[in-house]
Image 1 (cartoon, helix red, strand yellow):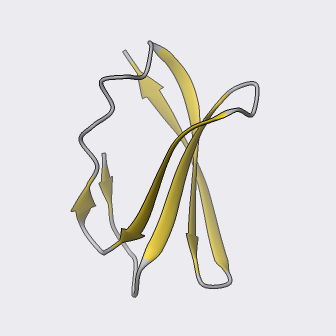
Image 2 (cartoon, one colour):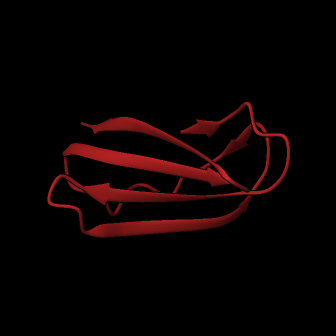
Amino acid sequence: MVISGIKGNARASISDVSGRTVSEYYNISNNQTISDLDHLKAGIYLVKITEGNNQFNSKLLKK
């Protein structure tokens, strides 16, 4: 997963569909790759990226 469009440092959290946080990443910079997703089981996850007062949400499908 590549995080892009960030101007400064951000924080990313990945949650399962029940809302339980399964991974958190800090000091994410623009175009940074998060590649350690092997521990996630197949399914749909919610990704929340927080940069200052801005928050972006997306879905992640793990096959």
